[in-house]
Amino acid sequence: MPSTVLHSLLAAASLSSVAFAAPAYDVIQARSTPGTKHVIANLFQWNWNSVAQECAWLGQNGYGFVQVSPTNEHIQGSQWWTDYQVVSYKLQSKRGSAAEFSNMVKTCKNAGVGVIV
Image (cartoon, rainbow, N blue to C red):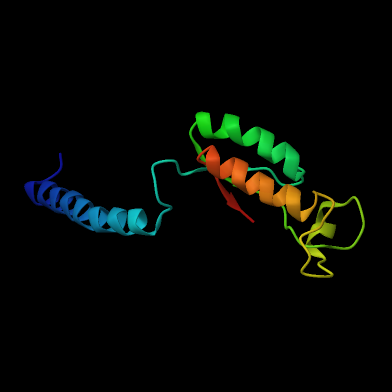
C-alpha cells in the first residue's frame, strides 16, 4: 500500500503539471492562427479552380485553412516534386494561371477559409 509520502508526492506532481500546462496552453493559443477554425485541409496537387469550388464546403464544415501546392512557374512534369523546381517568380503553374489563383484566394476568403502556400 502506498505511503502517505508517496501520495503527497503524487499530488504535488499533479498540481505542478497543471501549473505548467496552463501557461503552455496560453502560449500555444497566442501563437495559433486567429479565429476559432484551426483545421487545415491539404489540397496539394489540386488546380486553383477546384480548390475555389471546394472552399465553400470547407468553410461551412469548420475548416479554417486550405494548403495548396506552390504557385510559381516550375519545370514540366507530372510528378509531384516538379512543383518545387521553380524556374521563375511568375504565378503560372500546372495548377493554373495568376488570375485563377487570385480568384481562388478571393473565393476562399469569402468562405472564411485562409490559403496557405
